[in-house]
Length: 132
Image 1 (cartoon, one colour):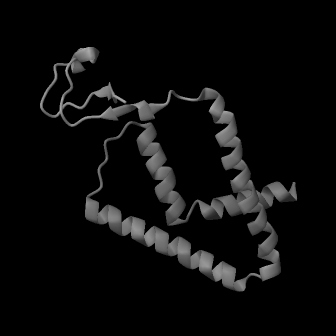
Image 2 (tube, helix red, strand yellow):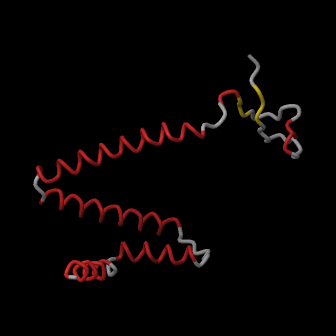
Image 3 (cartoon, rainbow, N blue to C red):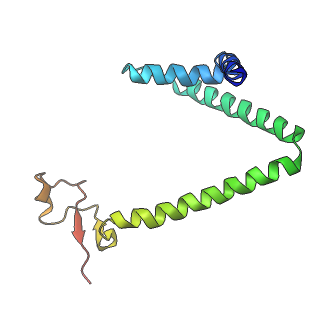
């Protein structure tokens, strides 16, 4: 029970952080279907500040941490990353897509490019077989 109380206390404290506030606010706005648009300059500034905050906090924690305490989790993180990539490569190979190297996109409309019901235009690029 003490663990749950400690978890809820820390969670409530984290809810007051601006980083998590932006995350939850953005998720709520997206779920409600809002079309909120942030101007590009403000967006870049917010992203810059959040990345700086994360980097500085992480740097301070790493400076305070003992190298021996960080080495094992870092090695496991690398190992798990490699395993995920290998699993994805060999399990997703089951659902292999056709070899797309046979096709190319041409900036000029190919004859018969209206195979998808569209009229060929000057900027239309349709896949066609490469002659070998």
